[in-house]
Amino acid sequence: MNALELRASLALASVYVLRMLGLFMVMPVLAVAAMDYSDYSPLMVGLAVGGYGLTQAALQIPMGMMSDKWGRKPVILFGLAVFAFGSFVAANADTMAWLIVGRILQGAGAIAGAIMALATDVSRESQRAKVLAVIGIAIGFSFYMAVLLGPLIANNWGLAGIFAITGVLAIVCMPLVQWVVPNGEILSSGDTLPQKGQLKRLVFSSQLWRLNVSVLILHMLITLLFVQLPLTLLHFDMALDSHWTVYLPVLGISVVGLVIMMGMARGRTPKSYLLFAVVLMGSAFAALAMKDHSWWITTAAVVLFFTGFNYLEANFPSLVSSIAPAGQKGTAMGIYASFQFFGAFLGGMLSGFVTDIWSPDIAYMIGGVSTLLWLYIIYGLKEVSRVKRVMMNGSFNSHQEDALEKNISLVPGVLEVTLNSQNGTVYLKVNRDFDATQARAVIDSA
Image (cartoon, rainbow, N blue to C red; front, side, top):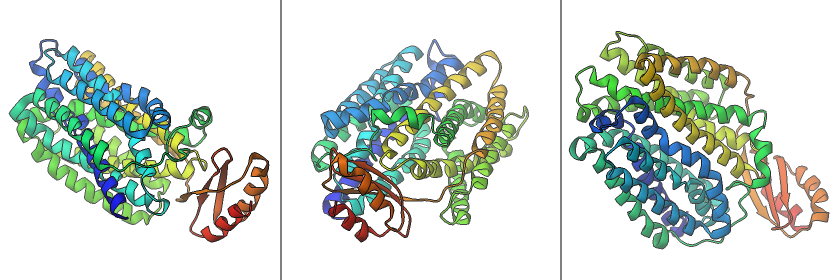
C-alpha cells in the first residue's frame, strides 16, 4: 500500500473501532446496570441490548445506496452525527424507555456499507483487499475490546458514562473522515454496495438465504447470551467490575480455538467445520440451561460458545463473497448485514420476553434448541471453493456485451462474468489460474 492507502485504511479502521466500541460496550453490562431504572424489566433490557439492530437492519441497504447518490463522506458524517445524538439521548435517559430510544437512534447511523465503499474508492484494485482486511481486523478487535472495557467503564461511570464516551468518540471520528481520509472518485459499486435491481433475486438465492438465516441466528444467539450472562455471573457473587476477569481468558482461549480450526481447515471452509461450530454453540447453551451449573461449567460453556462464534463470524462473509454472482457482491453483503443486525434485535427481544414470562434457564434452552434448526439449514449448504473478485474497466457498448462476455469466459481461470456497458465495467469471479494479462487484452480489443 502507498501512503494514501495506508492513511485511508488506518483512519477508516479507527472510525470503525470507535463506533463499534460504542455499540458493543453496553452488551456485557446493560442487564446489570439497568436495574437502577424504575421501569426495569427483562424485556426492556432485551430491547435495549438489541434495539440498535432494528434500525441497522432497516437502513443498512438504503444508506449504502444514498452514498452512491450523495457521496460517501456526507453519508458517513450524517450517520456519525445520528449515532452521536442517539448516544447522548441514552446517556441522559432516566428510564429504560428513553434508553431504548437512544439505542434505536444509534442504530440509525448505519454507515458500514458507505465506509467500505469509501475504502474501495480511495484504493487501487491491487491493494484493495489489504485495505479491506485492515478494516475487517479492526471490526473484530473492537468487539473484544468492548467486552473487556464495558464492565470497567460501567463500574466507574455507569451506563451514562459508557454512552457519553460513545457519543464523544463518534464526534472524534468526524474530522478523521473529513480531513484524514483522502477523497476518492466514486467507483461503480456493484461489488461494493447494494443495487436495487438485484435485491429480490439474491434474497431468494438457494444458497445465500442459508447464510443469511445463519448469520441471523448467530447474532440472535450472541445477543441472547449477553442479555443473560451478566446476571448469571452475579449468582457467583461476581461484581460487575470483575466480569472482565472471566471475559479475558474466555476470549483468549476461544481465539486459540479459532486459530486451531482455521489451521486444520487449511484455507478452506468445510461444511463439517461449520456444523461442528454450531454444535459447540448448542452445547454451550445446553450447559447454561442446567439449573445448578457451577462457575466452571459456565466458564467452559462460554469458551465453547465463543470458539464456535468466532469461527462462523470469520467464515460466513467469505462464503457470501464466494457464492454471490460476479458484480453482485455489494448487494449480497448488504442483505447479509441486514439479516445480521436483525438477528441482534431478535435475540434481545426474544431473551427479554422469555425471561419476563418464564426464566433465564428457558431462554438458554431456546438458544440451544434453535441450533438444531440451524444444523438443518447449514446441512443443505454446498461447499464452495474460495474465489477472487476482479473489476476491470473498458470501452464497450450494449451490442458488444454478448461477444465480450463469451470471449472473457474463455480466459483461463474465469468462473463468472458480469458486464455493465453504461460505465464500461467488467466484474469477474476468478480462481488461481486467472490470466489477468489475457483478460485485459480481450477487453481492450472489444
